[in-house]
Amino acid sequence: MNKHTHHILAAAIAVALAPAAYAAGEAKNVIFFLGDGMGPVTTTATRLKYVKEEGSLAMDKLPYTARVKTYSLDAQTTDSAPSMAAYMTGVKMRNDVISMDGATQALAYKPTADAVTKVASAVNNCPATGNGAPSATLLELAIKQGKATGSVTTARLTHATPAATYAHICHRDAEYDIARQAVPGGAGFNSALGTGVDVLMGGISYYWRPYNATSTPRGRPDGRDLVAELQAKGYTFVNDLPSLTAAPVAAGTKLIGLYDQALSQGHMSYDLDRDPAREPSLTQMTTKAIDILSKNSKGFFLMVEGGRIDHALHGSNAARALADTKAFDDAIQAAIDKVRTFDPELKDTLIVVTADHDHTMAFNGYGKRGTDILGLNINYATGTPSTDANGVNYTTLVFGNGSNRVDVRNNLDPAVVAGKEYLQEVAIRRGTPGSETHGGGDVMLFATGAGVASKTFKGTIDNTKVFSLVKSAAGY
Image (cartoon, one colour):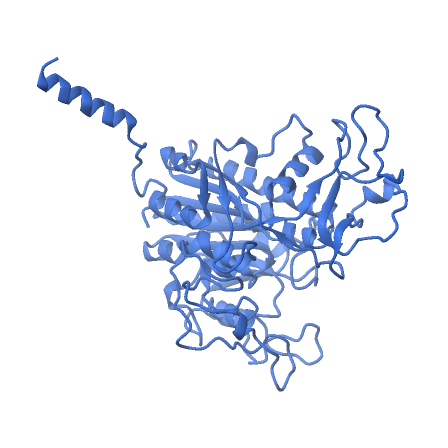
C-alpha cells in the first residue's frame, strides 16, 4: 500500500467512525411534550391498562429514545421548576427556581400573603437584583427567529412547567408575578417575549383576574385584569370547549385560554372527571394550537404538558394518573396526525416527549399477564390473589410514601381498588392526600421527526443536554 492509498483509507475509516452529523436548523417546527411526573412505572402501567402487555402507546412508537437524569442543582430529587427549566434553558438550577441561572436562590424568598387582602402568595419576595439572572428559554429563542410560539397545559397556566417556557423568577409560587410576565407592554412583562406568546392555554383565571372579595378564589390583589389587557393586545379569550372551537386560526391569531370548569386548585379537570361537552381535552387544545401556530411561514415552537399526571400521583391515585397519561399520549398521536397534514414525513418537525421527574409508584408481586393493573395482584402461577405474610391480599400498584398507610391491613375489595377514587397503599405515611413525593429515578425520552436531528436523542443524558439538542436541531 503506498502512502497516498494509506491516507485515503485512513480518512475513510475516520469518517466511518465519526459521530453522525446533522444539519443545524433542520427542525423548522418543534413540539415539546412534557408528562409531569410521568416516570417509567407510570408509562408501563398505562400501557398495561389501556393497550395490554403486547400493545404500544403512541410514545412507545417513536423511534429514538434516551434515559434522562433529572437531579437539580441542590437536590437528588427535583421538583418541576428546575427540571422543566433545565429542558428549556440548559441550566441546572435549584428547586423552586424558574428559568434563572445557577446562582439564583429560592428558599429564602418564598412569596407571602398580601397584607390588605390576605391573598396567599400574592407578594413576590424575589430581589430585583443580586439573586441570579434570567436564562433564555427555547420559546424565547424561537421568538427571536420570528417563529410562532405556544404553551399548553392541563395545570394552571402559571404552574411551574408552563411558566418555565415564558417566565423567569426565583420562586415558582409567585404565580401572580408569573402571570404578568406574559402580558405584552404591561408592568412586569418579560420583554424577551416580543409581542407575546401566540397561544397560551391552561387552568383557571384567578391569577389573571382582579381581586374580588366575594369570589373564591379572590384574584389579583393588584387589581389588574390581565385577560382584558391581553384582549386589548389582540388576543382572543376562550374559557370552554365551544369558545375554543369557535376561535379563529388565521395567521397572526393570538389566543389565551383559561378553563375554569374544575376549580380544583386552579387546574383543569382530571380526564376521568372532565365534562367533554364543556372542558376541552389536551388533544383538542393541542390540535387547535397547531392549527394556529402552523400558519407562521417561519415555523413554530409549542410546549404541551400533561400536568395532572403529577397531581394524581401525589395523591397516590393511580386510576386518575393512568387516565391522564393516556390522555397525554392521545394528544401526542393527534399532534403527529395533525402535523402530517402539512409535513407528511415530519421532515420539518421535531417532536420530543419526556417527563420532568419520576414518582414513588412501584409494581408489587408477580402479577398474572392480562389482569387489571389497577386491581388486586393475581399470582401468575395460581391465578388467585397474592397475599402478604398475614394472608391479606394487596394491589399490584403501590407507592413508597403518601397518605394511605394503614396500621393493620385487611383484605381489599376488588371493586373498590379498581375505582377512580381509590388511593393506593403506601409504605411511609406522610400526611393528607397529595403528600406523596417525587422520585429521583431517571425518566424516558422519546423523539421523532426532522430527519436525522432526532437521532441525537440516545443513551443516558442529563436534562440540560436535551436543551442543547433541541436548540441545535432547530437552529436557535
